[in-house]
Length: 123
Ligand SMILES: [Zn+2]
Image 1 (tube, rainbow, N blue to C red):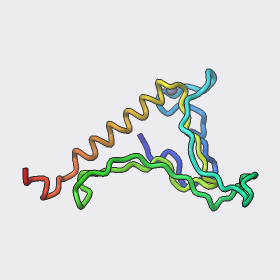
Image 2: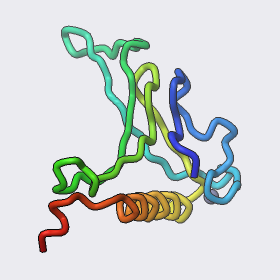
Image 3: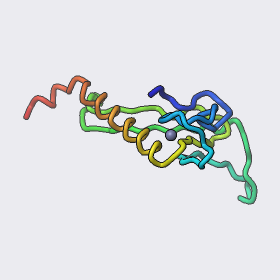
Image 4: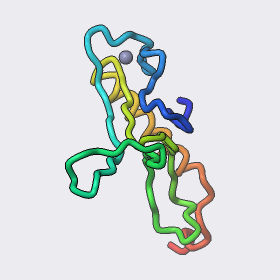
């Protein structure tokens, strides 16, 4: 799985080709999504202000106990999306579940392959 899914773009939709990352299918029967971001409001809170200065991001990770963070890991999923908002789409909930499960499996694998800290050997 190639990460980040979105980076350095003003188009907050992924995938741009509208084909499911998990199975390659189209979205003709609908789509599952992860949608997120921030919104800048006017002073009176009545309007949203669309500005490139808002930058959307999304990470998933684990913060462990090692002082050098050798038992920690992080994947950057979305980075530097102008206007601050993004939508990540899959053709089905099943494909979204598969993608997130694979992502978390990969995160666990990455963390388990890192060198444990010296203080981890004290037990
Ligand atoms: Zn799919």
